[in-house]
Length: 461
Image (cartoon, rainbow, N blue to C red; front, side, top):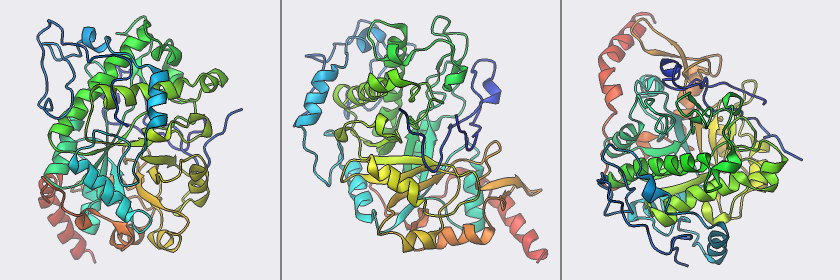
């Protein structure tokens, strides 16, 4: 695996005894490696009836089909396993489907998600949305943005990394995302570093998402009913559906990016070998997720982001809205990444928006403006500055204000990128229904220290 950057994720060390996982996203390079009309449930004639187990259902029941939960707050597997994805039937359904250019692939889309999607289409190829992956609840990247630019990225990236790991969910990412959208009016994207048991026969022996750390968990089995891996996959998909329904109920549209960076073998769902490619195990897992969320649970708030990054990992055009690539150059590179864009365009279906779903370096806004006719990134999202990445900040002042990592970019460049008319920031977002435009609580909490730091900065000039 050619790792351009190891990205340490929130809470890993604190749970190292229970979770055998040492880093975040895997490898993103300028050119990813290349190897040799109405939807109904596709497999079950009827939606399974709830079991006799006492159900605990979230408040999204009136919006989508709620996930059946047990009294102790876990997925009711009797209900969950009663629905299976019929891949052949699903493909026929997808082939017969026509998606309008101004509508997401989801036929369940609610009005607010549709409005967001149409706004994305309206700015695509004209401006680029600024985004930032969140590291943890302290969100010091955002403090850096606000301290130095009096603004914030328009979109924040969140992660369901610990949601499907027993005892591992320290920060409530779902609530963080709800607050960011409803209280601050920001856009939300979610990925999922999917931790599974290191050994499927010993599920209490730790969890991981990196292939090299997993001893016994088969991707082939994960899409094969009757196996242990399949039951875990169904359980975890429905548990994530439960979280997505909380967001739906709160009125939060989500740019949803599951099974990311599938072009390599660093994640257990990725392109590990010839068999994975030929038997399309990755695609089947993608279709399982799509089918359960769209046709079974009928979520209304999803805009689908495919991040397979390779021609062998392509999925049906009617299962994604946006095509993304993650790029982490080995040295400082603020270009528009023309080669990466071209490679992604070659494997993306016509009419889809393309995005820089993760990056190490912020593209130069002047170059973005000059090349907009040939390189149309919807948004760019630097990874968080936890661990050794530091794409935005590295270190702090005595008062705890993050210092811009000038090994990655100058302070002047950072300010320019947020001030550019080409880049849409938080202050420039339209007001979406049901949202306010308040500063996030972390920024408010740091206001006193930021003011003291500005006074110290003025004294030292």
